[in-house]
Length: 436
Image 1 (cartoon, one colour):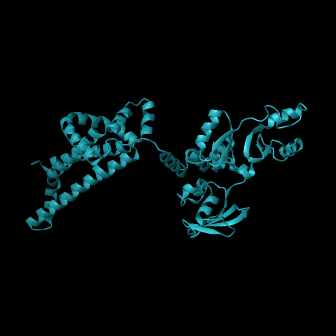
Image 2 (cartoon, one colour):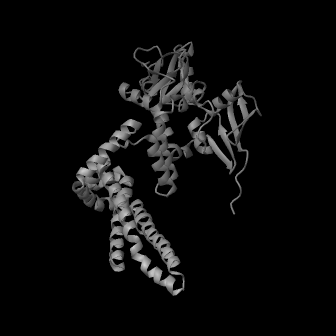
Image 3 (cartoon, helix red, strand yellow):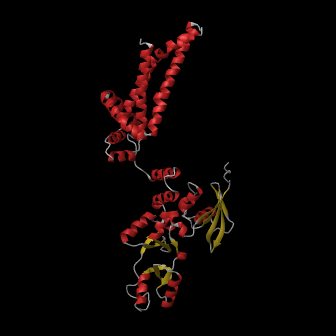
């Protein structure tokens, strides 16, 4: 049997070896693929080894488990000899019976060895591996791959058995490293919480991700606000309307807005005016073909159509062929930029105090959710705006003072204009407690 000094030396070596296994396990598992690729681009070839281990983790973690269990067994064999003699002498000095002294010495020695291993070979190394995973992984991947080569036969056996168990249980053999929109949003939120991203910048990132889910109706100009001409309008009426509503383009319709013939560019009207030519929408080549898009398209899809058609303006129609509104590329960009451009326009969401908001009825649901810190609203697939939420919830056209309570908030209709909900007061039902 080894002496106490030899046992202490063996314990120290086992602790160091176990710490290496713990740091290797935690650091490789926690290393971020994006950070490793950045290190590889900077010329550190060890990052490639870590990436290979993450792609094929079987051998690596098999070595770790074999090593940790072997260390635990050896620690149990030599642990008692490391501290038991000294503790036994102390118990004898305290005049305990020999049998009792040996029993107490064994228990105390076991607790001391266990405590040392928990602290120095488990908690502390894993804390280090979690704090700086990429840096630690670069240093431990080499020794661990060497151990995998040394114990290759044993590793091969256990790996095949593990693969078989994973197949039987239907578990994946590799981890999924695909970055999802939720991952990007979580990273952006973490950056905003840490102060790395300003709130408007964080909102821009969220809005860009939401381009794939927001439909065009959330950013359009509704039909009631679309300035349009009829093909038979007189020059006097056209001049008056341009003077009252200056825009770069105008829809041209026949009879009503639901019969769109195309659009006219204000620059072409100005050119005719400067050339002293009469302004008639029936003039050849003046009315141009307009891009028509369905109201179920997302903002990213309408951007793709803009790019394909080389247009920056489109008319939105529903399944019945009726005009719902119009959308321009500027509307999409304003949706993306959020607060960076909203000071130039009337805000749709105005926070009155810590527990109440005055919100425009046409505000898109994603903006409402963000302002109220909600995850979702009921039946969210049936509407795109706050007004739609109230209509679906009430199952009728809301009137003033109508209210809906959901998710800890009260949504009260404040103003209705020709069956259109203009303003909604949102109040937190249970106000937040005041901060001390």
